Image (cartoon, rainbow over all chains, first blue to last red; front, side, top):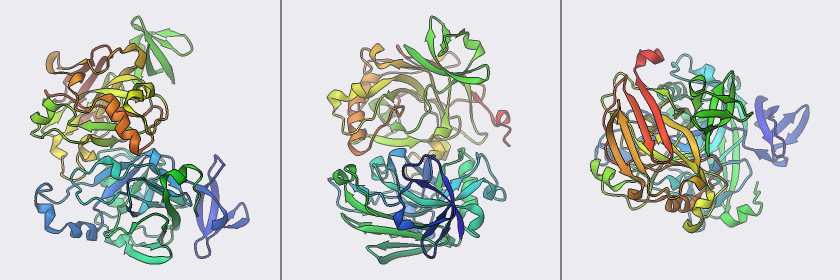
Length: 264
Length: 252
């Protein structure tokens, strides 16, 4: 059993629970409930920062392009972007597919949930600033150039499912060795491991907090592995991170989502 | 009306600026030197525009963009009027950017340009500093350039939308130690306020207190520790900021 914080739909407070990741059972105040019977709101409330090109394979996929215009050299410091509040949805909510768009990329990311205000934190201290970990789907409209992409590729409504819970830091032994799997309609389509990060978790916190403060409740994504799965209308997405959890959402047309849109 | 947030006597207050003094929300009238100015709203989603004035785009050797170059800023970067901004010791080119800030007043989705001003609560002044030494050519402008702690002074207050007859015809000026270094007009924006609200709300929901920083005209220059920078916009206000070195932040 892992200690987890979960925000149930319709309840303002966060519940302290334990979860059995093997059998998808959540133990809330000694009541055992299958996850499929729970509706979860996003367990986080702060700013969500994405990180670009932090998997070795993602950088390698750009190849020699990193030395050519417009990039001219490989990245030096972490390249961040913000997933604004309108993007955040919970486990089981539908990901809205905008009317004029046919395909979306699923960005399977480990989310580091910040536990206390972090400014200029060292590698050795970094672990003390982490509250826990969650699963994030950093959804984007497919785009090739990473030079100056338009903000709407990553910031549309519902483009950042998070959850179902936050696993407490102490229950994740090594965040830099977690297997991540993506299943589309039940079929395994992507597998990677956080051991392939260019900046492991502690180094990422050091290099980001050097120039910007992270606040309690903020989420720093470690990055998205190369070859993000592409999905379309009606597809069901499951992102699994060993020892952290599994986040499931279905792609539905934007207009259907506004009329309720729970999809499981 | 000019709406501010200030810290006074151990608490945070909403306040209005009336006849040269500050009226707290409990009606106490206090003097400016007795308060600490905070950003006039607690920012959530803050949009900033790159290259939204044709003269500035040419100054940076870019052709004017065909679609707004929007990036987002986090809450860490904002400070109020009369505060200090840190210039790191290794920076060689750090410049101010005087910008009109548009504060959203209510939830906005799929707003047409003719209705756009109905969704505006008011206007403020921002100084969107950039440290160009850290510019990288990935997801430009990268946050290490544009989202640093203390690098976005904003305020002193928000002026009600109804008090500004034409926000698209306001003079912006920046003074460094009293010398005018930047001057332009909001009428030279490539993408005007109604366009930006229509554009953004077409693909995402804007919420109350979101802010759109609408870009800066030409006239950028390097600023050093000790410099006093005033960014001001006609009819809105003057925002004072002081550049300080690493020693003030006890950084080495």
